[in-house]
Length: 117
Length: 150
Image (cartoon, rainbow over all chains, first blue to last red; front, side, top):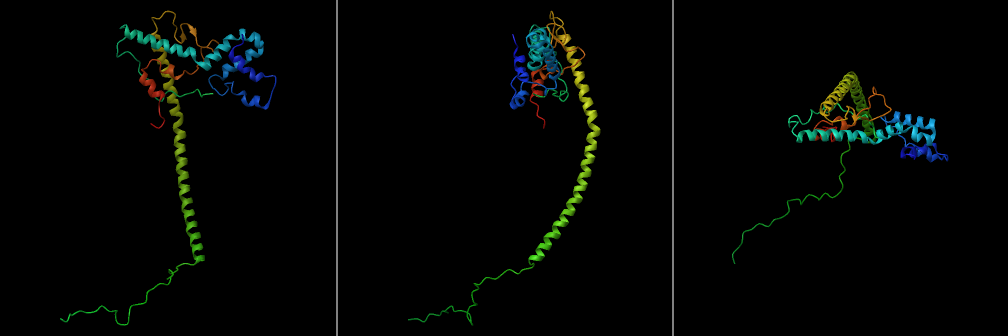
């Protein structure tokens, strides 16, 4: 079964090329995204080596990494689990109210390194 | 019939002055050529003064840019330093928080790594939610709705 990511990147290997193919080709890619560009190149290299049919099975790690980078699903679930655990500890009495949350980081220490694609 | 003493109002002797109704032109101080010359003189003087000020402002701008150039590396280095320190603090907080959860390893989702092909040494910058995972919602909102002009 061909994943959606692969299907989307089929635009770039399209058989029929028109001037609009390159014009809209950047929409499926994330080369402008500093965070995901290397993962996408890894995935495309792997797919190029194995071909589309075998690649969707052999390159499942690369494809999953690229999907995770674009959707951030696993990372958000991780944060959710940690916050749930923190609240559970507070409600069951293992954690005092003064100790409920950690000190916030300095306001200017976080810089958004992820430009939106 | 009594005689009434009164004096009839009459025009002054010699009559009223004639009413002025013709156009009296304003006295002309400059003719056209003088005004062109004055315009040229004032404009050239203004441009001269403007250029003097422009040179001064340019020097001030260069001085200010020099100060920025000297300060920027240390400010960026301090920002990166506090960023990395906070990442380390987050790891410690997570290890302390999730020590009783079975199957949990630090940096993973129940033992399952976030990225499978990325080596462990490589740092992929966390998203804001993860950076503020252990803080209160208010601290996260302060950062997420931060105004740059504050």
